[in-house]
Length: 261
Picture (spheres, rainbow, N blue to C red):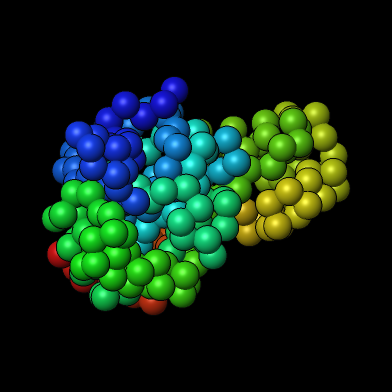
């Protein structure tokens, strides 16, 4: 369904249509925005909390001080982990040309963060207004150069691989081997491994590690302790999880969420 809650970029009362519009939301942990789509490109920024964006193609986790780019027309849902502050900018479709036509998570620099927050204080932005045009240009430049973050989990389309994905998505900490999973999905180990590499650009083992890390990140944002998050995500020990988290984010879980505050 179309998103009925966001501002539509249409002309009103004799004024030209804006080129971008913003919204700010405060969410409680566990809230969900159901499947919807919109005609604009969307930048969703998490200034606090963790958001999980899901489409038919995969899942993207947006931790604090990251943002996800959602192209126009892509149906998606958003789930909130931990109290979250969402800041959203809707751009006229195609205005930020250098960003891909697929969802992606990007790092938000301190400058881009301030630009997003300033834009959200204005509501709607139009290029004919000099100050607003300059603001949009600066945001566009920052977005074009923002590095992508490996927090996406693409889904394979092969029906046998999809059955494995659905099972692990429901229980990320499951300790079943790939051989055991293959017996339930109706495909050979070799076939499943090929499907993951061809359709997700990840080996099955890497895909599973990514799933566990993203699941644990959501647990931490919801207020769970490191030990609980590690066990639920299937790590052998809390220390193994902390080591993986630090390798991925450059900080321990406690350091990471302390920096958010």
